[in-house]
Image 1 (cartoon, rainbow, N blue to C red):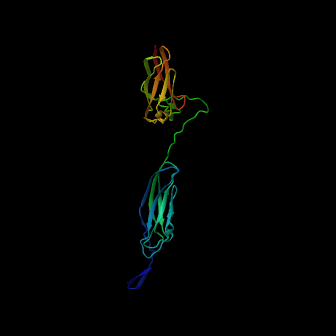
Image 2: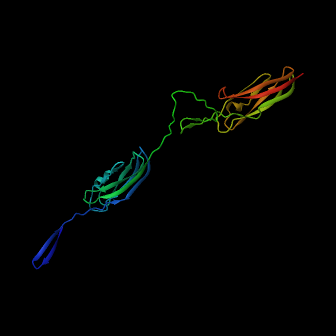
Image 3: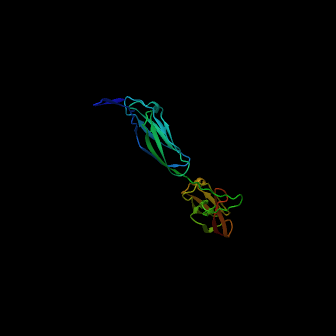
Length: 261
């Protein structure tokens, strides 16, 4: 409080004066931008509030409206001069789109409010839904595409076929009681799984796979020795069956030869 003395020819006039001093709180930012936050999630930013007046202690308050929120640190309740405290500001969108708000920071001195503008965008993450019929049968083939509804598709990868060095082996003429050998190379294509290969040949042919065929990694090869041992005269035919990952996955190599007397 104070007074002003105004002298005139009628005497001294006294004009009383009064006012209230305010503490100009310091803010680390006047705007907080949360960017994109998924609906149902929460984004958090921090604001620092400081009291620049060295001999006055103030009580800091924060006010905002949903979908924004604020939490003041305990030290904001009695902020000494020259000190600072933090305010955690949250954005929790419940709908999509751009949303704006205001955080009001005040203290226990009248007329000391400061405002911080708030903004964020709620984003909606859409999940694909597949329509499933109550009952039915769907046949999937390797390389085929099964479509369910306008927006959902399932592409089966199937089981990759083995790569063989030959689709058939001809041993030509072999004397009865003698043998002749040929070799077949089997490759497990890149990108598949490791397989256990089984082989079987019909008489008078025999098959002997290398040890590596029992666990053939993707991109690897192994060899199979096939033997023709005719016991009679004339043309003879057989087959070599290669199976893996169950008997349903088979590949056949045709075998032929002629027994000679």
